[in-house]
Image (cartoon, rainbow, N blue to C red; front, side, top):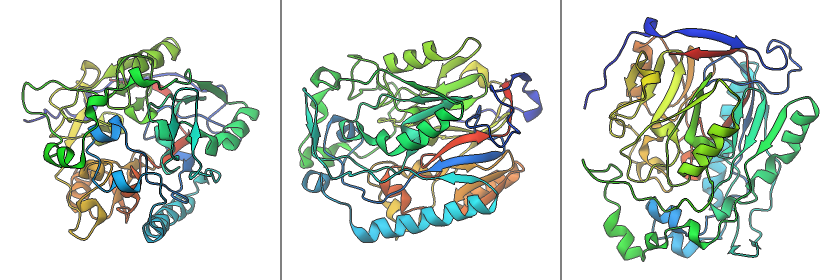
Length: 392
């Protein structure tokens, strides 16, 4: 499959307005319209106190490893946490060296069991990935409705930060908190370790195959990392954590003038769009050549970089990833429309970026991947210096 590259000068850009406050004002609390404008403030997650998540249909659909059946609800190993924390700290230092304000979540007792009237969970998971829980559109911080029971209270780690932004003038919105009752899940995805080991050979659907999802349409659920922002256009993938009702909730919640476009993926267990499609600057995006066959009309004038095969070292923890795929290699994060943070092992990807005028900033980040994400996942860009526009 070959994706057609269309020259970057083909896109149209229309400025449609600013946030409620001038983005050049350093007191503006929240203003972020896209994935590439110059970064001013960001929330970066933490791996401290991380747990092994509880088994369930969603992680089973994603190919949960055998050991998870035995270690669910236990703390992750301290040496793994230390190495991931060291990589995150180095990343934070680089951001601060570029004059970016960095905020971190508060500690959360992730090891505490909890329950609702309908179900219980052995523990929470981690607070490494704020992108999963919050979608920022302009000056509106939208809290998502995750279908993962072990993430039900994860957003509490960010409440102090979000309240602070609200006090300074930002908007706070929240999708209806989901009940997460039994009918939301397809329990046939639960398998014994032996069955699971036999069924997780490939993450790419064969031609003609139809997706099966571990969640139903019983209520609106979504994780914010299934969306990316290009000004007035948002792009989304339906996934193992985002259903049609969740996408429709976001579509109806957004102000007039915004459009939500679905990108269809061949990933057999899609989870978050940033290993499928990720904008880098107006008119330029990186796409997963294994999983993307076509893109919405709104992207017809964009130049597309096909992500090369991941190049993790054999000794890297990402050589055999736990909760995601090696395509975290393309899960990058833009400092601005020229500079991009990239995993230091991804030499081929960095070369492809240079061919398109981007400057990669290599950072060791493979141990962070053990906690479910990479650069784009562990960040929530609260403020970027750029107006709202349309890029087609």
